[in-house]
Image 1 (cartoon, rainbow, N blue to C red):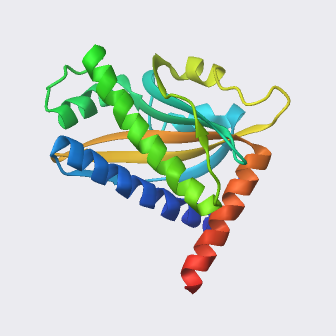
Image 2: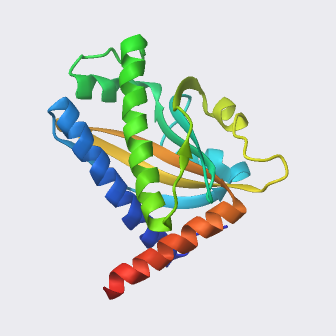
Length: 206
């Protein structure tokens, strides 16, 4: 499944709402002004996801992974490469975390960042779809991109697609770029995109 221009615009608008909520929450928690932009939205079959991810992250990555269920179910991820993750933690915590290092405290901060962002996005999507999601506890992993992709499981017989959303954090005049990924079965992805299209049309005519 590929997104049309209209679908891309609708998804981008919905994600922008969630990202603005995330930025506001992070700003309040840290006392620093946080901006969060969406440079790109695209959809890919799982088999074609790795080259698309390389535009945002490479090598070993820090991944916050949350499984969600409901009428639309799947896996949500926040991905940052290790250097970007430690830099973002250092900027937000003003801890000056050494680049490339992720100690226990840095992992806790990153897990909370991912938890806030993923819950904000799924909350907005749930509002638009008018459904309630169930959530598993988010987990933080440090692994290669290839290994991360190998862990994705929705159903052995289900064709899987990924909605890829670029995420550019700006804190104290510094930028860190990563991405959010929603991995969905084709039926869930179709329902998700159609619901957001309907929402965008209603908003435009209001």
